[in-house]
Length: 187
Image (cartoon, rainbow, N blue to C red; front, side, top):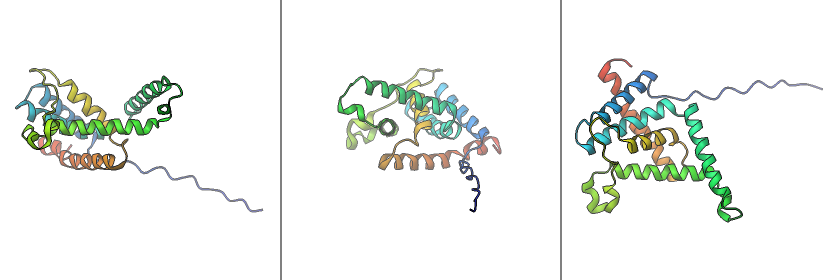
């Protein structure tokens, strides 16, 4: 009888990050300053802060304990809602797919907030959605709530929406990643 020893499985590949930890911190600080100090018109300020924040949050917090806690909390909340339906057919819904759909819908909402309002003639009210305006020296909390959720959970949706959002986030990250090094030197 021959005994074969199996080699241990190789560790999973390390995630490929586009930004260093320092670049993530600098990008988040820039986004916070842009939003807090109300630099520029509201629409431009919100777009700039959001476009800087989402890739930085994705690079800095994706797969972190905070990300896992957020997903687990959302999963538990949805499960409690499904449990309250009793034996209804909806109680058998896949929680992971529901979370992915919620994140996809949140992306659609964020895209509506990013569109210029002059597109409303073609796209209707969808192009008039905006993050609630905040006053001087105040953070736009709806913007940051959406940015944090999308930054940490953009890998959850599947299908066409999931593929599109991940591709858009990859492009945005590639655009934003060199920004801190350009402004402050090698980050």
